[in-house]
Image: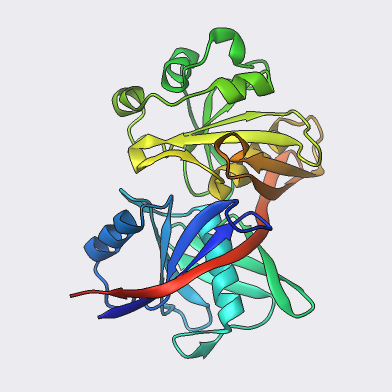
Length: 302
């Protein structure tokens, strides 16, 4: 069995930046176990597997795997997969055209907008498949241990360390300074003991500190998913922009921010995030960015 794949760098306008993604284009017939093994073989933050849609009015079914587990939803895999399919112009013999794609995923339907310049696909943007929701608060002491931080590194006046989700639950922690963000380092043994992957995907640290055209800098650690640090996490940042809008005093607001991630690990990523809040409730969140094609090839399965 031969599988065709491509890789793209997501949330970047240059090769060797952003977050790498592998997209297996003809995954029909693969078992879940084979998909997981292939994702582990690529050993990227995520690998996607494109299947024919269950409902023919949608573009494709997309399954997303980290090296260790399947994800119901994630951001950079959707942005990259939409970029790949829109550039290809077809999937399983069906045309892929227009400025809107719809993916069937474990978390629900994911709507993707396509940005073309002079006819070429350059960027895509997703709408989160489920509304922003909140989970448990987690003790600051656990965050400090898990991320090698000190008590005065944490900024707790707006919200405590809190689990939030737009399809994938992550723990959001605001820090006081860019220096504190740079100093953070994950301790996998603490994650394994206190924050197993059945509880959360990972910890998303952020600081609202402008740097050039960047409004917010972030880092995300998910060692329980085989991701010591992620260069760009769309699923986290699409929830982060919703979290920030939720805590704004305005009842009605459209909040847009440019988010940087991966800068401290040599994979700078730039994500365009926005949220709509109406009547005091966050009603929609979006994340998008540019992509760059990298490699293509064939997997030969025995």
